[in-house]
Length: 398
Image 1: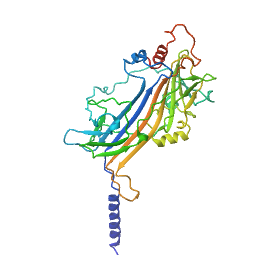
Image 2: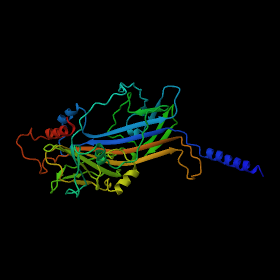
Image 3: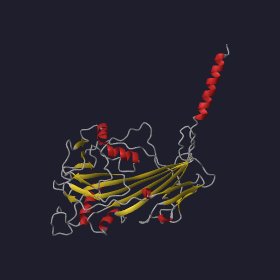
Image 4: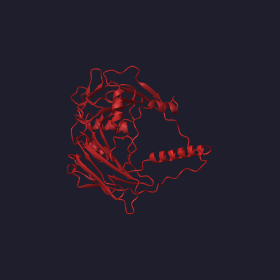
């Protein structure tokens, strides 16, 4: 009878060991991400070939639809040879047979940390007054604007005033210690993506530091259509009617605008949300779950929407710029796929994510012929190029 406690303890110990083996943690595995973006910096109603605007950016093409692609691979494997990986692409992508995923060189930082005990330099508290508006409509909503005055606010209050909804954090593959990383575009290959390029078809990632990663993309995961605006029109109440062409693969839309009142020195912020929301964290890739949640919360516009009226908060002639995003579908894969039986052991060999968005920027200016531009015999003074240039300078300090 005296040996019973020992037998009980032994059984408990054995069960703990079995449980430990059964709850063995998933080993690290490679992650591959494709970030697919379409952008369109547009001038609705303005003539094409406006070199005067391009000159503001050193001749770089800034306007018209463009396609961007970011490929990122990270793996816990460290090859004995030089890291090498390639993404074999479908013929419809029109960029050759494959794209090289190059491991970036780690450059030594020139940053010199400050000496211990040294106090940071004193600085003057910035002074600014900002007005925050929200919602689509002919009139300004109740309780607006929310005023932010840095001269009378504490730093903590300032941060809370600008805080918005926090989407799911997405940690893309990146260089990190003990792992191997490769990316495209890179120092060796920055091939421009053709306007007619398509991602639809079979994809295969092969390398000496990760297993083969194979998947197929359909039309929902292809480059999204560019955001195309109709010429801005002024509403009866002095607001701005923004209309855009429906994007078939969009699952939601969101818009923000920023302007500056040169007379009062106030900055003006607006978002298309029906509830108070600055939207600073929403102008990027979002998960479909976040998009659905924010549509339900009346923050993001339903994909059936094709118009929104900005209330009369921007005065004629004052600099203003609108930022717009259409969220796309997402693809998340693991190999092998998750088993239907939750009790079955699941050892992931690799994962892949494809995320999509289509963005646009547009000056808040009503086109000629829409009844808001003043008659002026001086064509230079009232030229579209000069007006747009002044808007860009006013907002970005060009």
